[in-house]
Length: 211
Image 1 (cartoon, rainbow, N blue to C red):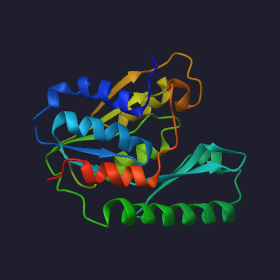
Image 2 (tube, rainbow, N blue to C red):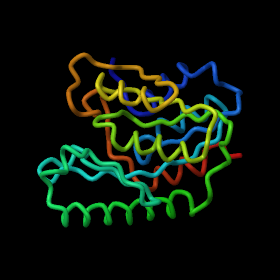
Image 3 (cartoon, helix red, strand yellow):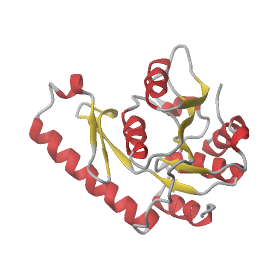
């Protein structure tokens, strides 16, 4: 299965979540690409849209391959096997840089507003795809601190290995495409996979439903 763009992926994914339409749901998206997908889902479900802000640290020899993830509150999740061979000073520097950028995103996208109350509510966590899974798994951990009733992971594309890891942490995984032979890049499954800008995220968050 391929997707025309993130909007198309969000529309298709939203219909897979039809049973939650009109219920007490909050949609959380991972910036930046996940916000485009999450916006379509929030619109369809009639749910507020918020963000879980997590940044990846890529391998020094392959920046697209995540070896750690850091949230705007400083929580970190790393692939311990991968970081064993990484210079610790380099890694600490990169983690600090990405945390600073995550904090900038929170200020820019949300103006530092607090998350809506999600205790005992249904939460749908959205991204435009999952590759290594580190950023998404850290986002699930972040959401658990707010004690939602259910965490539903919803993505257009994920590898089989990562899907199993997400299922073990979230209450439910809704994914449109789990390719047998994952090509290693989320963008390979989109006809159009442009870099989402800060301005687009801000615009979508301003237009998104809020409670």
